[in-house]
Image (cartoon, rainbow, N blue to C red; front, side):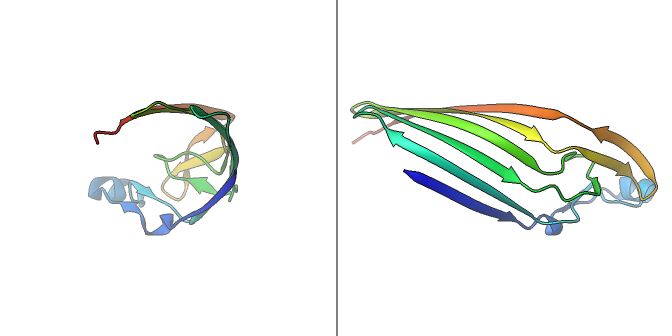
Length: 134
């Protein structure tokens, strides 16, 4: 099975205000100047009655400029894998994703650089057990 997703997030409407921080820096605590679109493409396969596997790739474009101090990234690329094991009344799902986070510069106010975030990566995982009670 081939699957895909396109996710658009209206980040420009998300703002966390902290009055003292804004007074000192001229900026809200967290804000975003651009909305984001994230693309995912994957392939899944049922191996037999019990096992299914899937893999995906993802992409989020780099927009440039400075980033929020609480979200220091600009774009991303990722790879993910997942597996599902189905039993009579239960299902066990697990997956992992590796992400290459886009380089970013952060600022405190309009004039002062705060940090450079380069060559960052991350890994995430999940495990879910579902039991049917019928």
